[in-house]
Image 1 (cartoon, one colour):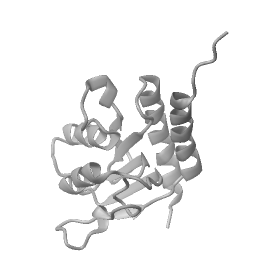
Image 2 (image 1 turned 90 degrees about the vertical axis):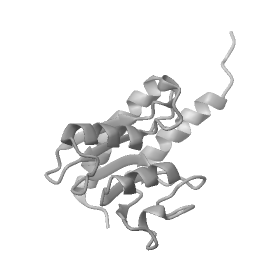
Image 3 (image 1 turned 30 degrees about the horizontal axis):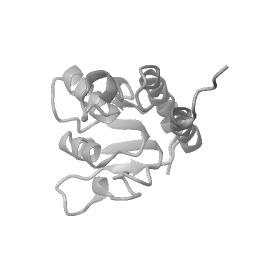
Image 4 (image 1 turned 180 degrees about the vertical axis):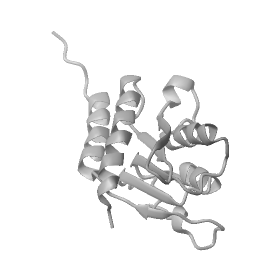
Length: 158
């Protein structure tokens, strides 16, 4: 069940996604919040900027949060991201011991929080996360659709 604060937090993640789009990267944004709801980490896709295949929004935000709290474990935090995490990001979330994940658009091709895989809730693993998916899904999904449509559409020549 989605909570009212999830929408507020997703708007923060959307602001991060806009930063990715401004640098020609896939517009995915993420924030990490502590138990009091204070943002302790921010990130957006930086794969193109850094030439780094691991620079997904979630990983960047987790690194930022771990640096801010000076601990690799984030057991009292919530990760909010505009797109369902992939397998790599789900692994990073579990490694950081993040107990709650809130995401926007579902990723039917690479999602690992319930669509293609369900890594975050896999009972065979030693850590699991509570997942809230589909928060502002229309808005977060439209951001991605618009980005990819613009890349596929040939420029108009005068």
